[in-house]
Image 1 (cartoon, rainbow, N blue to C red):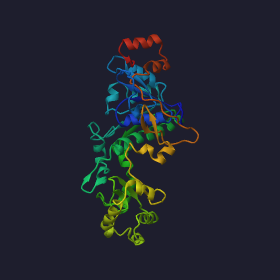
Image 2: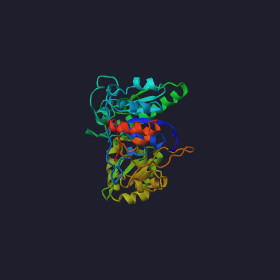
Image 3: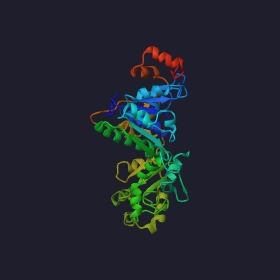
Image 4: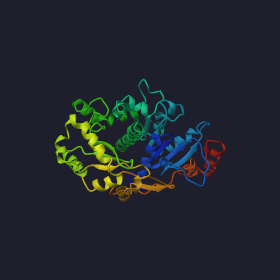
Length: 380
């Protein structure tokens, strides 16, 4: 393991979505992340194409077997962080709640990740990203004028969930290293998606933002911050907000510079948008990229996920790496002194059961007994 988190041990009670991403991000930075999976899987010829499994080790524990939870508690004795994404109360019913863990390891940071949080009227309800961001005002602000559009799962699950969890457990870890006392980090995707809307709330309070979609500076409401279709059916992204960048846009489009004085004349925006649509439709995406790339017009091609790794800037920075036969995002951010290495391949569930138990102090006979009793499994 290499990176700034080398030496940090994380127990991830495996789940779906934002929890595994949080574990991956910690592993990318060098943490020893142990994924506790419910069962082992057969080892095939090809590794799972799952970037969220990369860089981790996996132990398969059958939590339905009597005494199996003791294996996880044993791992927690020497761990720095535990993360779980169950509904409120589930970890406690499994005997793996904060009280049980902190009895053995008072300095452990216990990270909890849910959509609604551990408390509140909706805490026990099911939900998905679209639901969590719908009650925080985020979804209402995203999309076309006539309808909100779900922004993939990026805002609730991953920004409001995974990133906030990582941010929270690392802050708590700093405190634990100083005080010797761990704590519970209650990460709710509702809280997180609200937190990242701080700027928009400030703009609204200042009278700059309207509670309407496609009516504001950065939501597609202006002609100079939106996407335009090109002659080949592709798109260019335009973000020329500042006057000096807008001037570069006008120059690149070969329009009269008199357009520059009308940039913030909202009454003229419909006509400006129509003119920009006409001009962009006259050339291909490649043509426009060649024209705008050397400028500060803030205009760039809209690439697909398949195209993105080959873009010269991404290639130069090695923004994407190939692991397990497919391109995926490289670890981020970059560090000057504790450089991260390339993550190892995605695990098979239960692949590292034996080595994890050995490192926890179990003897070979102990491990064989755990396997025969059905408490743990090994990937075959």
